[in-house]
Length: 144
Image (cartoon, rainbow, N blue to C red; front, side, top):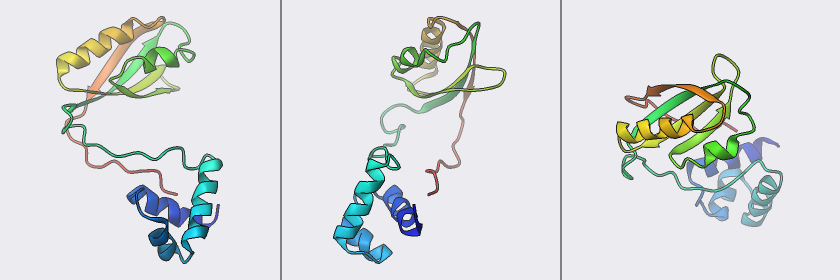
């Protein structure tokens, strides 16, 4: 991956709908050459998907929490059980005092409590510690 690829990634992270001609003009390539580079970045798995960033508050999901999940045994093979809870946006197996870290978005704290109950239904889960976010300063994409 060279500097042009990095520039293309940065531009696409700002606005994935930018036409290839505009991307190419920004990095000094033709639209066709830009299209080929972006296609190769997709094929290599550098670009995993193209998505739209939606405001969770506008969708009624204003409660954000990070939950540390404790376990009495290895739960690293339980990713499908975590994924089955739609309010969980991310789940990560971690090292440290907890086994899994999940990012949860709900409309209310009562719904967050329900998510915690469903986490306890996963085999091996022995505890949770939720941290509710009061304000987000910023979120940023991975820098190319």
